[in-house]
Length: 379
Image (cartoon, rainbow, N blue to C red; front, side):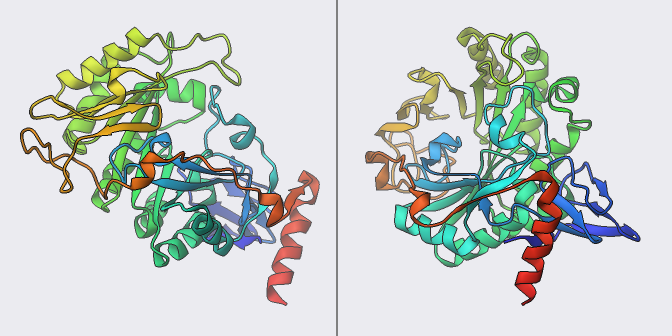
């Protein structure tokens, strides 16, 4: 199940540099990167969690959140352990911040077969940062595209040019998950990210490569909710990605190491939304507040209600088949089509124990695990 990484280079005898994310960790034999899942063994870099999915679920695509890409569809979601950030507020910290090698044994072919069986229309790489398991995602995504699935990812956008080249080959849409209005000091203090500017550059390159982008911004009260920063971020998005880019301001909930920060006041989210609208953004949403009017889509032309939502559910759809407003004819920025599954319950349980087994490797045995896996592949 282990696979030699695509993204690395040898910098000296026995020393490799991982090129998956801008940390570019330099590793000696027996060391792993910041993410905890990319290991140097005998002078080669391996993705130790290749084919090991720690979390698997079928979700509505709106949960990602992607409101403007194949609305109403179901996506087969997978994750591994590990992350290239260390967010103190991570809601998936038990997956992303555990530096362990563990997961359900799911090679790419099995992921696609289970996606077929579940009735999903796409596959999403999510819950932890897909950049750290990009080789697994890439192999899965190539098979998925041949079988007629689309591929999406939920990413922090902290990736290198080398990773962007791979992402552009198989990813159709991405949610880029900004934290704290893209304030570099916030990113440094609460996520241990030294250069948040690289996220913006990655978004521009994803757009250039034809990846459909929606942006989320987690608004953290008291420490990551400056409206001037929000205005700066929105202006950048409007100028570089276009005013048609959907933006979602997400409500923070206390978790992990930031239990002392209260949930984001709804009024503060509404102020962020007003800033975005005043800067010319056409599709502005508020997330994690079920029932709020800014879960809905409104026509940028005539302002009529076009899509009514509660949470991840579509309750009303008033857009024509060619994605235009039926009242004024404005072309709505939606990629793909409305899937009839929006009328169904789109969360499905996958009984993985019926199909495969769970693997957990003790930290001091990972090197042996990788060596055995490599030897098994050779034989």
